[in-house]
Image 1 (cartoon, helix red, strand yellow):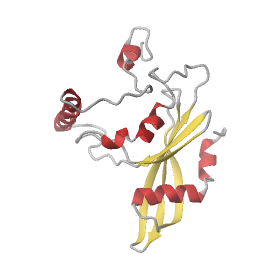
Image 2 (tube, rainbow, N blue to C red):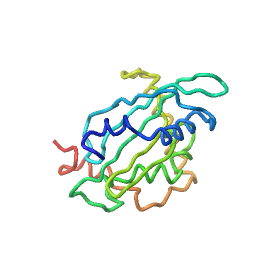
Image 3 (cartoon, helix red, strand yellow):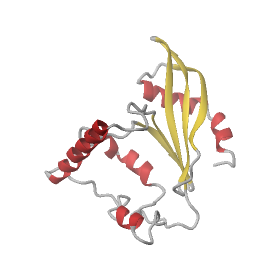
Length: 188
């Protein structure tokens, strides 16, 4: 990525963005009228995250003029960190998960955002995905926690009763052990 990623994204090829928005809107005929890009996060908590950006605008089709929003997540290959796929902070894990189709096949009650495509190079990856609008707000009520726990329980239960786990080298089984260990990433 360039030193100023936001400037680069403001000049993105309209054909690339049009293809993404057509997937989002499920309309191969629409035409982009305008668009803007805004950062969703400036945090650099995990070294592989290059940024999260919301593209929004207006499009026109036979149905008329409609607003749209999509998200771009940029991943960076960190310098000096392991390139082993089984390590919990493997920089390409997220794009590989989307490309595998696994996130589109999760059990009922849990789902990932729709994936509209990705672009990879030796040192970076871009993931185009659905914009998810929060419905509960930032502060959850007890009912929100109950519903989330119920969905996660069903999700995990599916794998206990026969749904096979995906076997890919980029799936890690040591995340919590590595992250919460006394010497781990989030240790104080």
